[in-house]
Figure 1: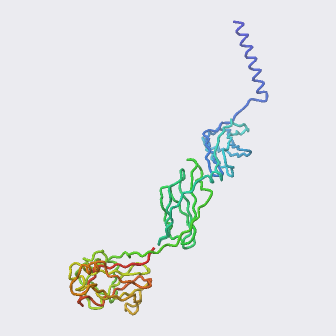
Figure 2: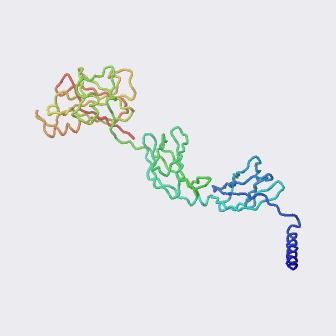
Figure 3: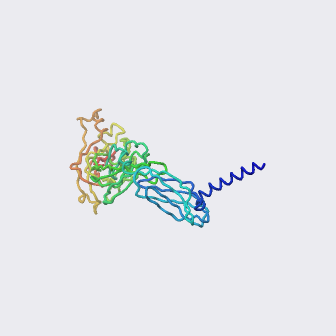
Length: 390
């Protein structure tokens, strides 16, 4: 037993010697260790976040990287401190951050290492642009049609100049196959860059290094039919009112020549049409009422007409204050009283009234001077105006 006691005593003496060797300058005291450290990547920057318990003597949080250091005071009025330190002007690559705390006596905690990615020009230059298949200019501006999205891209940022010379910026999402540039200025440039999110928790959506520049083309004018309805028929002072039979004004624009508008008020009989906008007018097609053989080139179908127009409503409804667009007469192609199949086909195709020089008008007056059988009434199967539009 005595021998065992002596051995234990000797062991304790040796331990004390070793301990004294390492604490001869005093015992090592550590501050509280930072916890839950995360580094958020970004474009030439990172954000270091950490969570740590606040102790009575906890004083500062220190972050070191490369040869630099940032020190942040720790609040003392809370049990848990949350630190969010953004570090800018970092070089591209992987960066090692050393995070530790200091207590009020200057004691440091154990260092916690954390790595973060910094993105920059090298990364940007490797990114692919989303392609464009077509830019089409329309009346309202322009439409840009995009190709499929490059992998990992999250959208496109596009800028363009509007007709007020203001720069407009639009975001094109990955789900968008096209984008409308409202009020875009024809002939001006649009610019765009494709956007990427390199990591889910990235601070920045990063654009491609290069910018794609394209010209918004001048729109191409094409001849199109003007969309009209019964509400397009105006009621000026000397216009002809409906006869109370037939299909009313709506029968003029329903693409059916068996329905019709009927009018009865002596000659000339006048219909005024509001096309809704000023446009270069190219022609009118007029169909007779064609619901029986006797109507093809007879009865109250219009035989002689004049067209008048104006870009702005004249002060007077007198035809002398309107621009004459043309005078037209419709005749049966064949001779004789019988209506042949060719005659019917000709009438069913509509009588075409070409308007020379395509004047820009909004209001058109159809003046019927005579019907095929000089009746006191007049009817029209259908009207269709054509103009140059975007």
